[in-house]
Image 1 (cartoon, rainbow, N blue to C red):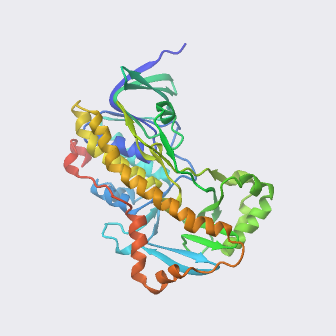
Image 2 (cartoon, rainbow, N blue to C red; image 1 turned 180 degrees about the horizontal axis):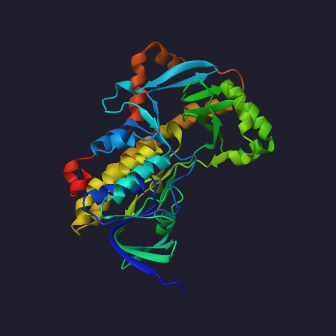
Image 3 (cartoon, rainbow, N blue to C red; image 1 turned 90 degrees about the vertical axis):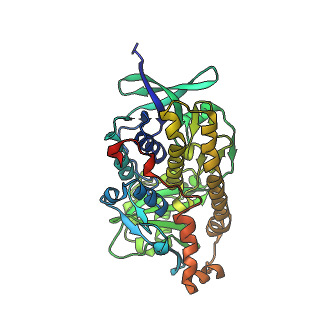
Length: 412
């Protein structure tokens, strides 16, 4: 029987996604001892959220991380549009946002995570354990005091003043906690796939016609595509055959007609089961949930990564000093939820509205699609494009970082 390794730290974070790595990094900047667990051997995963919004870029600038981050390959998107029956309608213009980087940076999520991890490893209090799967938390006298995990060298227990569940929408720690969940539901699921990007083409928020809706994200030499469809229709779509699927994509986006044959099997098409839910209470003594583990978001607006990062920034600001000084209280954990619950609820409400007023009509339309009058206004009155840019690019209650919180000289 393999001996269980015991580690001790001030904060143990389950999940090496944007929320977990950002929180670990920012706590370490404040002199907190942190252990972050990532179940995979690396961060390389395709079809993860990779739209880094102006709000996140602004916060990274405040952390003095933006310049080095933008040295990595990315695509800049400062305007978005929707194409309805081949008529392009401008929707959002980010160029007027009062931030240092008024655009969306399209960058693979593994680049974002690698960048944060590299910065974290330069600090003595930051430990990142790869290939280490969080399995369960341990309670002592009604308080969570440790996390049990399985690592590459066998079982490990991390004793901590605080355990943070940042392990996503399928969080094993959330399931164990039995904390009540409000399931809002989502009427759609999404296929994710990539296709080669030829010269030219239009960067679009979406393409809509009688075949449904297709979202195309310019990733340089390829398009990352998302095809939403009514929840439960996966089996029916697959039964119609891959060729029918290719033809549907080509009708939605004629510029992809020569590329669809690159989908050689259904293995090239990934299914994202959309969830929209949130915990009613994000914490219990010694345990806190953030990011998708606290509030699973729809892919509408590409806000999931950014909301998770905002959670991490707020949590680090609120919890850094109490953790470092050994005086963490339940009130501190409640303060994180109080700060971030309203943005999560408001964003989810907006996503539900988008499902009802945009996605479902787009997916149920079987005849020629006409441009709604409201969308014509964005075309006729350019300043209106600043409104959706503000809503998508900055979100609700964007968080900021103050370097006066830093306790490590080499972190500033």
